[in-house]
Image 1 (cartoon, rainbow, N blue to C red):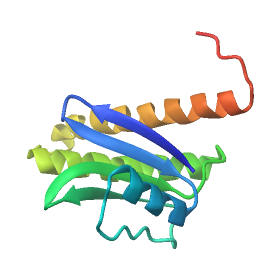
Image 2: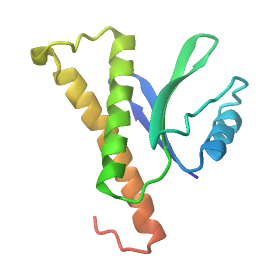
Image 3: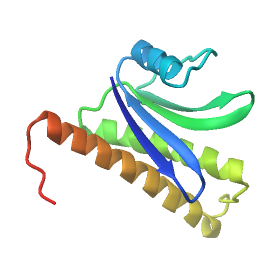
Length: 135
């Protein structure tokens, strides 16, 4: 199981992307956040996103991916779940993105979340493959 963290300081939103076995991810969430509630990741999908709450207060957004084999489907699933996450954050902050000319906030937030997790996942992959990263 892999865990990647991204904090968006514009909207003060903590986000995690977890990749791996559903049950391992559920246990990681319980242990990492000392979460006593029920974590129920739906195994019927390749990914999902949800808000982790404590005492009815949003704590962070979680994106779960079953796998990341760097296929087009995996990238699409990550993007899809990042978009769900972005809409949840903007809704919580009262940002209206419902009309085309008001959607720039949504687009930029989605870009930030998706780009951050994609970079972290790619860096982790390169490390595991012993690929030299040139900066």
